[in-house]
Length: 386
Image (cartoon, rainbow, N blue to C red; front, side, top):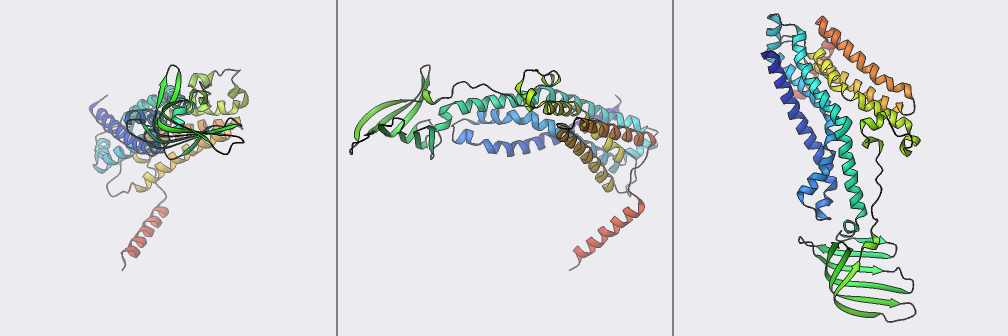
């Protein structure tokens, strides 16, 4: 790789990483805020919160990486054109293919990253996230420790906790047990704590009153206590079998599915559509770079506007991605539609290489350019008018 190619590779890949990290962080924050109760109501620390919500990051990278590469390639090409570097390279006899190979090198690296994430890391992250959520749902402690709520932990058993302190101590506890049809038991306690050991999970209450109301008696029996243990293990769901969705299957599990898998028996079309979506995913970075270079890689003077070419590149990428999305959705019930995404990629890749090889400049017709210029001028005049 020559010095020019190395310079382009470094600039493009650096811009790609910057855009990828920025977009992923913004979208991750919006997703993570929905699980903020992991820290507030369940008493988890920041590291646990980041660890759990961060499991969705590989899936976000899988979706954002091709878009980030498109933005990076367009930025680099626009910068090279603005600084007249493309014109100088072209005047020095540099073939467009040499310039294109530098961008294609970045696309291949990104494609390998997308392939690895699609095949293993994204399903692995979703599996770990599901495992964690299953543990939370099976853990009665995470269910009851929600201050300010009346929570039914079982049929006839309701618990209310006024507050949970930072040290884990519970304040203002009300426990109502109506499982026995002949007796209703209500426990009021000032403080308490959750104890989890080999014998089970217990709610240990301090300084409270147990009130028992038997059927047929007008007056309840009340007993004060200094310390009282209530077994919560009986309400735990125990270990639950985790059933992974199609999105959470590894690539090789989609290639060779288990014929006895209930999901595969019920939804073979979904397995097929997901498999083709995974196979096509690494092709998008390459197709996006080809489209971007076909529209923006030709040398232009500073007087020639690149705005319409940028719009054309974005439109081409959006159309290709829309075809892929529609092919995956409808291909689950209509198998032949899965081929549309391959046809779209072939047209974009072949057409883009033809344009690059011939050195064509993709621009809208002159009458459309003149009309858009006139329209922009009129709008500017109206906005500037007092």
